[in-house]
Length: 53
Image (cartoon, rainbow, N blue to C red):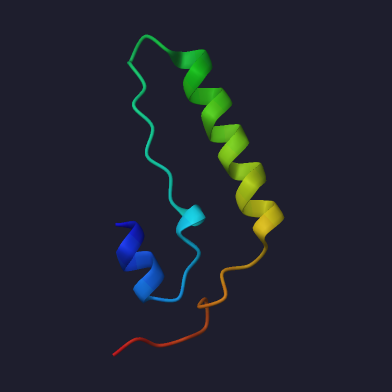
């Protein structure tokens, strides 16, 4: 998946895979909040308005 992101010109840091058990609600919230902040810091997706054919 990271290679596909790179091919599309996206920073591969815009994708994250984390294994979290259904019983780890607090960890789920923490990981989600951390990743959301990271994406906000990265700014707008540079390919947002591009059309891929």
